[in-house]
Amino acid sequence: MCPKRAAANTSAADFLPQRRTISSLRKAAQDCRGCALYQNATQTVFGEGAVRAGLLLIGEQPGDQEDLQGRPFVGPAGKLLTEALEAAAIERDEVYVTNAVKHFKWTPRGKRRLHAKPSSREVAACRPWLEAEIEAIEPQVIVCLGATAAQSLLGPSFRITRQRGEILASDWAPALVATYHPSAILRAPDPAERDALRSLFADDLKLAGKALQNAARRRPAK
Image (cartoon, rainbow, N blue to C red; front, side):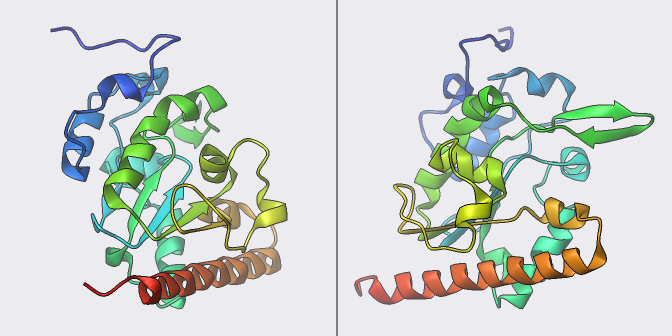
């Protein structure tokens, strides 16, 4: 059978498996043609981590190293994320990390592949994978890393600059926190600004950690 081709009216919904565990979703996502981004990507980069994680972190899309290795947050942004999680006393292997878009969108610059922001249509096409991940994991707390991730769940009017570092109401989890994407911190041109953003980023993850603790205390005993 020929693989499905991306068309204007297709999305990841056409490729979701009937049985929606993280394992079955990851396997099905490798053949996703819900938008055209797969054509220039090395592979689908699905989420990974604890399959019943209380804390789920969502970024924008895989970067160059993630595209090559097939794993989320393994490049420079991933290193910064791991450091910030450690500062917040959160073990990375106890959380689940993923992206709003599962394929690397890039533009060539000589021999380099530079990140290109996914369009709202591409984010919408990929959203069924994200929804299915959330439903399978049932997190208590979601952390959106950057505007694209936050807008994918909260709508296009959401602004990190206005609502960063707050516990937000959400239909997706009992608590949701939006913060900077690690890549945005790394791109800050001034060292003092980068240090300030790193500190705020760690504070936001600490806030998410406290929200997770509070959710655990409210959970009825079995």
